Amino acid sequence: MFGTLKHPAIATLTVLTLTGLALPAQAQSDLPQPGELALRTARAYREQARYPESSRVLRAGEADPVRTQRTPTKQSRRGPEGAGPELSVWASQVSVEVGKPIDLYAELLSLGEPSLPLEVNGEIAGPAGEIVAQVAYRDDGRTPDRRAGDGIWSARLTLPAGLEPDGAAPYMVRTTARLLDGDLRQAAGGFLYSNPSARLTGRYRDTVKDGNLILSAEVDVREAGRFHLSGTLYSLQGEPIGTAQAAAQLEPGRRWIRLSFYGLMFHDRKVAGPYRLGSLALATAGRMPMALNDLVENAYVTKGYKLGAMTAAPFADPKLLEAAARLDLDGLRAQADPTARE
Image (cartoon, rainbow, N blue to C red; front, side, top):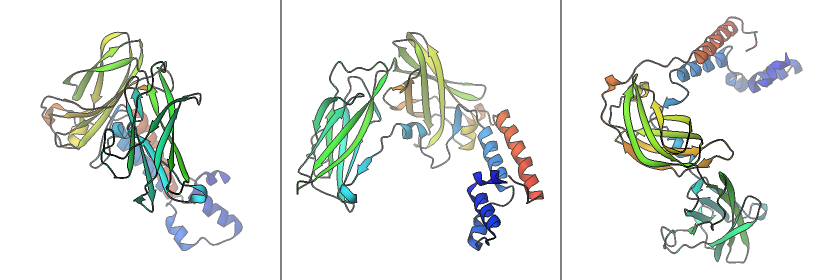
């Protein structure tokens, strides 16, 4: 009986039944009907089965997952006992390659409006907590600051030589803003310092094989290893169409990695070629954290293709379809016998 407690809605019903309490009307309407959870999951599995694991369509309005994974997020912190203003910090990238600069940002807000600090400074701590660099933020419109007086303080950092990691290493940015009354606000963000074993050369080629768009990217491999490549394809009008990923074990030298964009996505989105490779991300796998190459945007435009060149057949992943069939049976049994447990 108590196995049902794993499901929150069912758990509520079970506890009320055991204690002899009546279930509120609103709670009754919120509970899934018998078999509903199983049937809903089966539908999701069937939709997922239309595409291989390595490639999927992006629905209208859906964000580019490759770009999203490489987009930094703000880290915010208020003063003691939640006192304002609030300090938010972030970096221009989630990862930066060795020898390249990264821009750091800070913003001080009080009730949603910029609050003027006396100064904003940051210190950069390495993987062992050691301080490796310090920066002073500015809001004067000089590079890397985009606009003077907009409340976003900026600093550019290039880590000193000798810190090149064997793969990748996390660095913390501890930022302190001194307020006009002398109080301090502190917040911490960070980034990954990456030393990848391969780099994209900027050469690409495309073809259609078995009804799928094959887009190949050339990489210059410095050290043998396993590499992961992911990319998102766009229409020429700027709409994301679909995404694909691939992994390959490569030896040193100039090599190619192929991304296969499953042909059904072009029928689902009703878009013929040419297509634009809007985002492309390469990473060196094999150790954690993975060493990330900088994100490449608008890397390539393919040849023109008619929709008829692309497969319109669902991939029909057998494991997902088998799981969906089992869930359908479970859901139908539960509907036939509402006292049965899902």
